Amino acid sequence: MPEQLETHPEGRTHVAAAALPVVLIPGDGIGPEITTCVRDILEAAGAPLAWQVHPAGLCCTDQVPSGLPKTTMAAIAEHCVALKGPTETPSGSGHKSVNVTIRKGLELYANIRPVRSLPGVETPYGNIDLVLVRENIEDTYGGIEHFQTPDVAQCLKVITRPGTLAACRRAFNLARDQGRKRVTCVHKANIHKLTDGLFLECFREVAAQFPDITADDILVDNLCMQLVRKPSQFDVLMLPNLYGDIVSDLCAGLVGGLGVAPSGNIGDRIAVFEAVHGSAPDIAGKGVANPTALLLAAIQMLRHLGLLLTADRIERALDAVLAAGIRTRDLGGTAGSAEFTKAMIAALPARAESDALPTLPEDPSVLRATGSAGGTRIETIGLDVFVEHGDLATVPPVPQAAGRMRLSMISNRGTKVYPGPLPDIRMVNWYRCRYVADGPVQDSEIMALLESVSHACTWVHIERLRTQEGKALYSKAQGE
Ligand code: NAI
Image 1 (tube, helix red, strand yellow):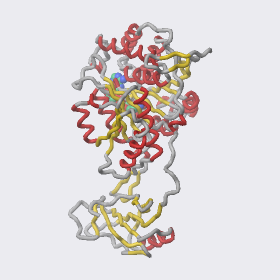
Image 2 (cartoon, rainbow, N blue to C red; image 1 turned 180 degrees about the vertical axis):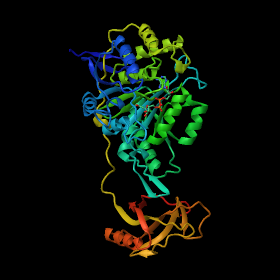
Image 3 (spheres, rainbow, N blue to C red; image 1 turned 90 degrees about the vertical axis):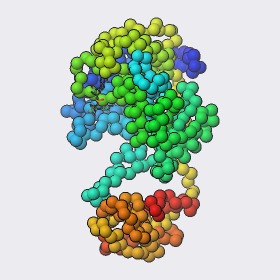
Image 4 (tube, rainbow, N blue to C red; image 1 turned 60 degrees about the vertical axis):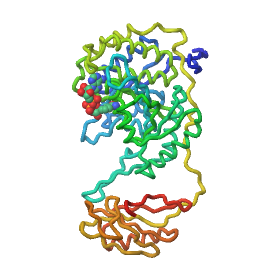
């Protein structure tokens, strides 16, 4: 197929090519119904896509217990772009979520959710047009959880420099591409000083490379309050995984709920687009499902592929259909999925010749993250030893010292309980005993300390206390 150059009104350059292969996953429940609607609309709009249909979800757990055939993963990896219907994860069955496997297995590190008010979808919040970018892999979603004692469960919140830099670059690039003016980092660095502190530091590092875009930050609690008071004040929001998960659903609620919330899971090379909602088993097969969220995800996908004009036309048709009152039941209307789809196809504006022209892909090397500079002096100067101790009226009888390391503090649920009087707090049978030396210690000294502690109590977990150029790489306890 010959290639030709074309320029979008916003000034981006396109290269026309053969139909682009896109993996289509119908999924479970209402998935097959709504993917058919969306496919029909995109085909009627002349989007030059070659659909590669592959299964995933409950529908194929008979053949593959994971619900995700290797051939489906391979197809996504080969063709780089997928439109995915919702897949069902049976609760308590031990099945891993197909979504999480796709996201993590393909390093789709940024979840991008456009949040836009739609005509005819009444909300009390006025006109909203913002984009939420959520880091998609890290934070507490590593799923590193342990019971420390039968009464104490722990989840590791892991924020990394390369992961955060990559997600933040994605947010700033998106802002620049979409002509947006401001990116706001959402965090809780006043409490999570090291983890959210690192997230904020990386955000600021990336922001410095985008002087044309205003960068600021806000605490996640204040953000929630501001969002329900005046959401139109925000442009692009950049969040760590957990806050992003919660706030993105809040944002979906601001513009009409799950039926109109799309999302894209984006990596350096691969992107998977889907509706935020699930497989809606309660309405599956009834012909009443709302295809809008998946259609909005498909519009996002077309833009990702550079098919900007086709995306614009479908978006205009959607606005017209909703404004004309053709809405599915979940939005207060009476239309079924088929009626909605028919109205969408009828409302598509005529196709201009230059419509179906994809943009050149972004150079992924620009997004490649690096670790921190080597050569900095990192030393272990002590150890936090977490021990189980059932007598809540006394601190555990651990040794005061071992070799050069001295017991400097014991805490319970993050509050210092030694030295000094026991504070009046609810205690649990899990204590952190902090041992610190005046200078660097060897592993052999750590082993000797653990040996000595194990004579007094059961230790269940340890953390090295490390410094970098003299700066502590660990937090203090409340009251330490
Ligand atoms: P759900 O989003 O499927 O349904 C919640 C409510 O919203 C239901 O009343 C449903 O009828 C309604 N609803 C959802 N989408 C709709 C649409 N397009 N049109 C009209 N009404 C719609 O959430 P639920 O019930 O918690 O989950 C059902 C299954 O979906 C579970 O197995 C879950 O694991 C899976 N799920 C899959 C997701 C994905 O693949 N991305 C995301 C969320 C859930």
